[in-house]
Amino acid sequence: MPVHASGVQSVLVFGDSLSAGYGLEKGQEWPALLQQRFGDRQLIIQVHNHSISGETTRGGLTRLARSLESSQPDIVILELGANDGLRGLSLKVMRQNLQQMIDLVVQHPAEVLLVGMHLPENYGQGYTGLFHRQFVSLARENELAFLPFLMDGLAIGLDMYQADGLHPTAAAQPQMMENVWEVLEPMLDRPAL
Image (cartoon, rainbow, N blue to C red; front, top):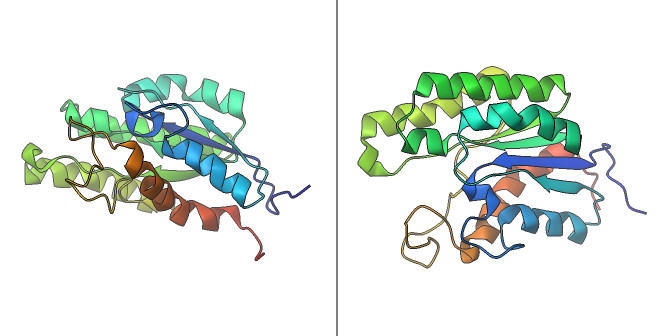
């Protein structure tokens, strides 16, 4: 049986609606496509998607320990913070919550792939810039693998977003998975085929 050379057996996706597949049929969301990618590459790695639509960093912090215990991940893809920003919650508290989650994952122990986020421009350049910088600095200070923006490369107006203009469609999920894969693959330390 093929097995991952580095011993990675489990990846936990811990996020909000962008990873939970809001508005999509089950199996269309990018974490399901990631599981398919592992299968296509004959990598015996299980993806556990513990993402919940509407989740904030505070909510994520309250349930992360249970998710780590149940999934026993080697890598955690941490994709939270968008709802904090959209609701105008304290960016200081958001950052503290993310840092505590990073600390929990590292203590587990597992590696973190931090996913950054951008807010819509109508939130104002000052706020949106400060929001995104929280992820950049957390990744740098903790020396984490970092994906600056999950939806990078999704063109507006090409059926990539649902009617709300925030949630990606099924057509967008392959690009989102590729964005994650670009950062995740080096973490797998897979030998050349």
